[in-house]
Length: 268
Image 1 (cartoon, helix red, strand yellow):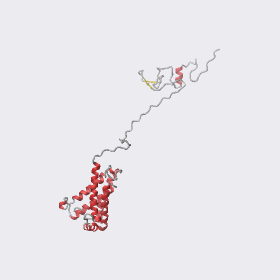
Image 2: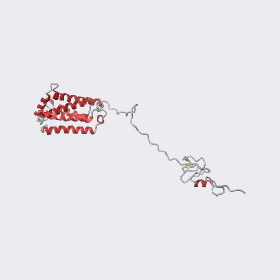
Image 3: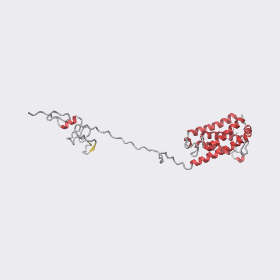
Image 4: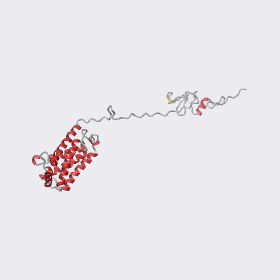
């Protein structure tokens, strides 16, 4: 007597009326016996995606035996390469070329600082045949300033300090603001010495004081450059907020000192 074989879970029983292709399709696996059939998702039985024209694009590797289930790998996303700034051999970011800009800023800053140092030393220490504190106080009194004695000390110290810090390129926005405030008052004092606006020095004009005011404003706006002690600060090469703050502070301080302690109308 012939015994019926026991049905295997991975293959259909003989004589059950279900062919191999149907059984594998019911288990969600492609039939190893079918090479041209296309499932509903466009994948042929041999693991090749069909495009309707008979040509196939490889989609996944067919399982090695019917009992092994092969998951389809998700498509891999390739990220675009990151664009980084050029760097030197030590990994430091390369700096953009600035030509002779930093050298020009050095000459501008040091030139203005030396001028302020010289004038401040005349008033504070009576150097270079200067008037000293007493002579500077008399000058401020004749110009109409109140509290001339205190202002003589404060003005001289501000002028010397601003000049020294500008030469070093240290705390440049604040040094430039102090230079701007003192040069504005020097301009107004020169105007009071010869009332009425005059430009040329030969006619007792204020061209020197105007030039110093412009130089101080330029230093505040451009920054000290890389040849300075502030070279690691953002305001050394790319000033923005510090420049506007220094400019507003310097102009406001100069005008407040003049109108609160003097009160005369300039260029009248």
